[in-house]
Image: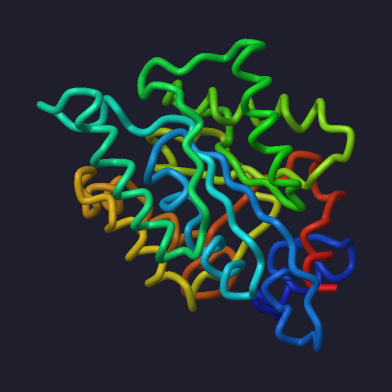
Length: 252
């Protein structure tokens, strides 16, 4: 009987699935065309906890990484003013981006009071388009946290309006408590970058990093790894389903 890992590998080869792992097999190519990766997250620590292992792996391949933080986490530290909390959390994000090899961009919305309107759609569109992305990651919009929903919806609408469509992938955070009804189309083996991801998450000291992992992220990495047949993995939903498979082009 074939193992699940072999089944997934054979299935992806036959129908063009699991394009994200194709990206990480770039070492088999003599020359890799460097691409631009953009990740849009609701708060500092969301991109790191949701797809930090994948971002680290892509960065190690030499691809350019930009993280757009919709808010600066202004409401995220009890007893601190918005200005005080934003200063602390911005520095934590900067520290995490150093570990992931990413460029941070702060969009300027307010934690807990995010807005989905045409004015903000225009601003997020510009931030994304200015990066000329080859691939974009963002929150799965079915999420209990309003800021996560807004980040995902603004990114989706930016994708809808883009003249040159970029591959769009959704990540999960705190599955079962925040991200809901998430059925992955793609997986990435983060076994080799799991520790880098953990270090990036632990830069967010004001957010109780052990609590972030106990929220379900450690279990998610193990469970998605079991689904893929590896030690640890991150899972994604592709905007256009399994037909897209554009991320594989990063390594071709």
